[in-house]
Length: 312
Ligand code: FAD
Ligand code: NAP
Image (spheres, rainbow, N blue to C red):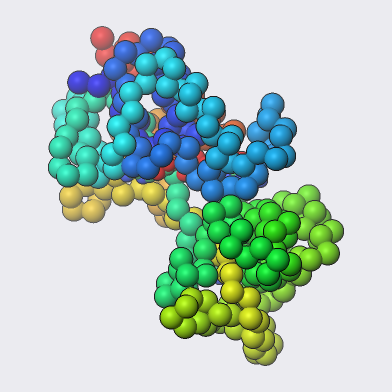
């Protein structure tokens, strides 16, 4: 029986692992279906984590030391996907991919979110063949070439800035006049001469052939369509909450959720099910920041320690 099963190895899960083990729990396992680090490893930079002010470091560089520190106090790691969490009596049964199960006294779910698709014609067909959701991974393929970015949030503008240092021109297509991104991020983008903001517009179609994406058709709200020969299209239109582990066999959630599929927690990261905690981007009103995900992870871990002491 585990003291605690942590699901997801992003900033929230790693921090929960650090605090549970350093706080004295001996039997804690973090289940992560890929490499630990979470979605920030896709980012070309991070400039708002207190104490970390190195602009030449990527999200991958940033998370590298987290893993070393968080596993230092005895946290175990299994590179496994979790299918489901169920409460069986006083304890939890965690079902892993393949069907094996693990029992745990407490569970902290930190499964985060995934990039959304925008839904334009050709997006799926050319995904991985010109359409991308990762500038750090794919930007270099378009060195000195023009690219298109879709979206008007922080991710779209930060990644447009990153791409502007590699690519000849970056065309940011956004469906409204106002941007959702933080004002300083928008200011920085507007000062970059090779970033062009194409507002009140959407991608109507990604076009190409067997070789991949050859260009995009951009439709303005006034109905005019412009074709651009940009062979790279980066889509940054938000995220879906990864909450499947909290669904039972009938597809019903085992704890209370809001209409957007986010887990309802209190300020202690407690869900509606005793012993079950949720932390990071998947919870209600998450600021979706590394620093807050880490903070959530530490809060949930301290609550787990108290919960186990109360049960003894
Ligand atoms: P995540 O980081 O999403 O981690 C969840 C983990 O759970 C993943 O590793 C996933 O593989 C794993 N997982 C999911 N389902 C399962 C399962 N069933 N079984 C096992 N494992 C599972 N924030 C900032 O503060 N500053 C920034 O500059 C910044 N830039 C960003 C740039 C980009 C491109 C993106 C995408 C995000 C950025 N963010 C930034 C936001 C930040 O990355 C997130 O807020 C943070 O990573 C959330 O942490 P998390 O632990 O909640 O979830
Ligand atoms: P987001 O804030 O939800 O922005 C998504 C953008 O895509 C919006 O501008 C939206 O337009 C647009 N969009 C959505 N669906 C679309 C569609 N089908 N077609 C065309 N455009 C579409 O997502 P995000 O930028 O990924 O950010 C997610 C969270 O992470 C945010 O809370 C953000 O603050 C945070 N984050 C923070 C930082 C940072 O602090 N440095 C960096 C990255 C991310 P509308 O505006 O019209 O809705």
